[in-house]
Length: 348
Image 1 (cartoon, rainbow, N blue to C red):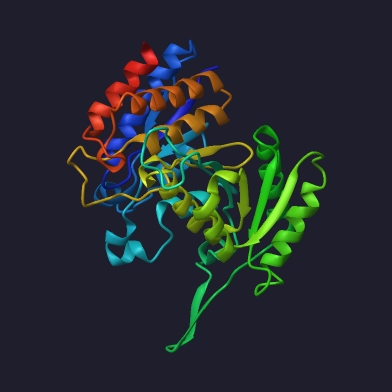
Image 2 (image 1 turned 90 degrees about the vertical axis):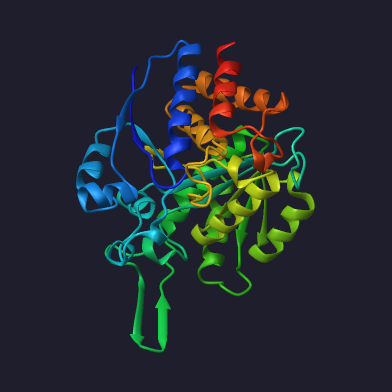
């Protein structure tokens, strides 16, 4: 079965790493004997503001409803004109609009690289639609408001249906891995919200015999990850905690440049590297495309193309093992050189 997937380059290094991912995914699909993907380029980001007057044009959103999934490059919304910064950024809008409730962020160290936690191999399962991210906690608006010039308020929303579905996704993933689930919360202070999250996650986990479950406060969790992160398997937590923890685990694995993710609902998924647009190195051919490539592999796996996804993972790891690495991993390879080496590893 052939798939139609969107290609949204984004800003900064997105114009380099997203085409690199497309190139590697095409090579893996061919090597696996899978049908080729039909790639559908769509406008987004600063370039879309110039051509369509919006960082996320209606034509992009409408086309995405007809696709199986898409690759989204990083965006630099902080650099957009003020009127475009006043609305949800492209990533936040798409997560909310398509109810992409599960943000799945693996962190796995590459053997032989300077990982801060050698042997790290875990997944942060982040609830993606509510929690302390106010922009995703309301039907309309951003969930932030100022009743006076001296008071600012943000809403954090926690609902049973949203917690149950992310907990179930986390439990099912843990059962396919090493059967250990860690719930991250702050119930000692936020008892009615993150305590609610913890308790519902434990309720759902009771449906999975053989699953080992523990839980930690968010502040203690950061310490445990630094000291013995390789002991953890699947972490499940609310939106903001998940965002922060996954940046930490990406660095502990060696670099945010290797930190992939997908944002998924039950019927569609968006592949998106966990890092930003890195405008300081954009256009210089220095960016590490690993995170975007690995995000694309996660999308293929989600679509049921596991053989192609496994080829990409092996290709990435074989390339790094041969000493072909970008600067963030202690090497000298540029984006194009690294991408070509991964394609060669897959096609060999």
